[in-house]
Image: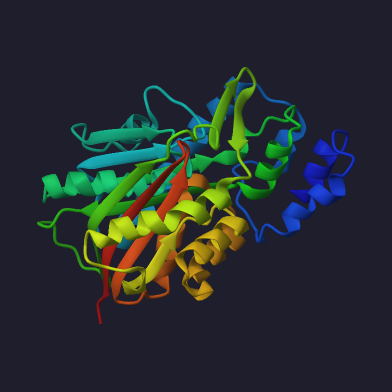
Length: 335
């Protein structure tokens, strides 16, 4: 990606080598791309990129759902609801409708397509799925987060924000199953969602998002994000936890969307916690890059794979708006 970016942006920036140092400092060693780099050698129309988004989002969503069913012991006939999360392409009918058709799921499956929450979508999607499962204790809800960030790349956009985004964002897809209390299934762990919190920060609409152009979705990505995290996140977390008579020190597992290296550092500084609490977050950023809404679900899976600490977990992500999403979890490994 660094060599590709040099080729793409060098004519615009006389200090291109200095700017490309951001790739070296991004703490990202590997990333997934849905298409080979050669795909971006020529400018593509919005339609070309979005048509490919629909094709690949459907293909990889089904693969992720099928894998989650195998891992959980459910059958596709058990699915009662689908929550589909994405911000990197558009489709009407929405992708969840295409999934039901392609997989021949129950035609009465209820579906909620959620678009535009960006990196905050993963936590928000789980919150919406939990609301469904609480209302219907027999529900089996599949949450699918699909972000093909690479397909939003606009070759003709030689802005600094596009250069930074090229070094940070990648493609990722994840599926999670949330069940109601009356649904029995064997598992090596138990995670209960105790509460959630959403916050929209006033007068920050220009911090993160898309500008919709004829050529596609142009990234809006402010350098002020780490400072906003440093300034606001501690008060927001304390406000949330105080509702349950908890403190930051009571949290055993911090399941946090990485955002980027500076965002991770801002979280640690603001919350005054040991950097080791973000080992799983850093690992996902290093191995996959920032996959927008899907990233925090990768972090959650890393906690599950590594056996989390029994106790409370705090799941957090930030997104356009500017906004934050949090969930309080009760987590227990089964011996």
